[in-house]
Image 1 (cartoon, one colour):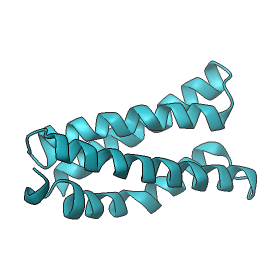
Image 2 (cartoon, helix red, strand yellow):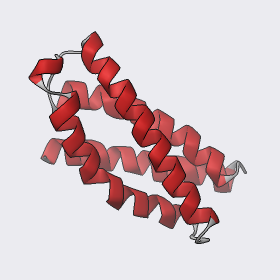
Image 3 (cartoon, rainbow, N blue to C red):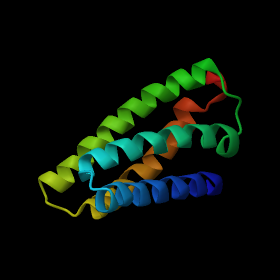
Length: 121
């Protein structure tokens, strides 16, 4: 759980700083900035989880399962984010923080139980 926490923290720092950089410094709208950075962060997370957290070998089956997982959480995360900033008018960095809290543990347990299991490797 500690290794997962370290990877998650790194990922969320990337999401927060990357979205801030693209939005406030470059001028891209928050929705697109978040979409782009979240995609990069999820890809980074897969490689770090494979090599560092769950210490498994990269296989076609685990990659396939992770892609489904990635698409589901990517879509759900973006919907929640856009709902928070458009419907509730929450500042975009606070909306990211809410998503971090909501999705962090949920992703860990799903990855541990369904993605990085010995039956998928």
